Length: 464
Image (cartoon, rainbow, N blue to C red; front, side, top):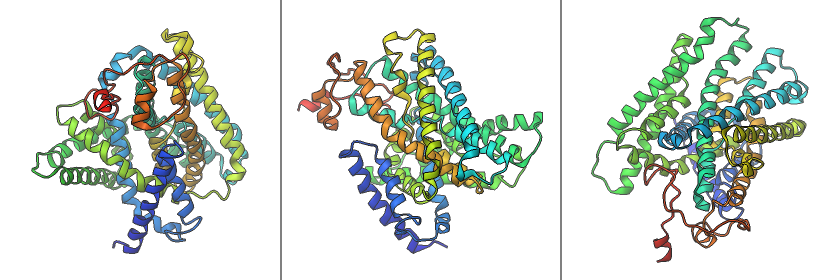
């Protein structure tokens, strides 16, 4: 039965989050989702308790969170445009191959050294500690293509460096989601003490393959039921398609929950299903423009309840004791990004003058990483909440620092457009680097006019 009071409380809380997000975005110049999370933290059951003082009531909103997580997965898949990846295939491949192991190795070193000594994880057995280290290292590998694209739109940046950062971020996140699906299985094997066999090693790959098949089936259902031609006014058509896409996403999670009682080979990863579905659409036939446009326009609204609820479940009572671990993870990640980006640029033959600050295009973390944190808390109720709180603390810092770093480096390499044009579109930003040439972009980054990767600015309309 639906809890009417809880639904009303969630609606009021989302209205507060929306206004806080606008404040953060337009006045403080940081992403809106930071405001959503902080609103959830302040108003959640562990603080002001505006949504109730019992955290267990939030379990009734599980399907709401799953639908929002499905939209985040679809949006990540929509950014996986093959045409963009082919333009700089060598540079992207080398960059990903160098950054991924460097960051993973550094995070593994930090976690294995400091996690056993952290009070938050005291009392865990050795198997749980290994699983915690594995999942923390996996989650903090994630990037934020959405934040990178938002900065590109704001600055009107265009060029090889911009395309490399955006496309490499998309590939990195796709790899991380697949790696996350594999490491979830390995963590369960470690915690349960099951010996590794050939069958258990193949299980994650079977899970990924099945998730891809379900993602294709999901795209077919959306194409048949949701994206079919309907004669409705634009607002009603958007509402019909966005709600339909949201409900189909919830259906994927319900289907996944149903399969949990079956043999482990029959399980799927619902987030990976949604990523695959988005990738099938964005590289498919003409309906992709309508689907990508629907997801792009609906995502800001689904982000509000999702990130607000992420903040609600967070408790920072014991966070003071893990600050050394948080700052160690942040510092180790930045050092590994510097090394990986420098080596990748050198091997790929990229301009040497960019080697020392290329890493600044890969700092931000946001939606996908927080979505993985939430999935950890659902998969491992015993210790998943602790991992979620620790990782979200790191992600919040990266979310504040990352966009500023990326904006600065785009100006530094000279791929930012005329400041007058940017101020009309997004207001005053950082000062342009003295050596930055003034130019106006003449083509788009994305493949279609409505694709979220689009960074084209219509100068004629601005002048009018």
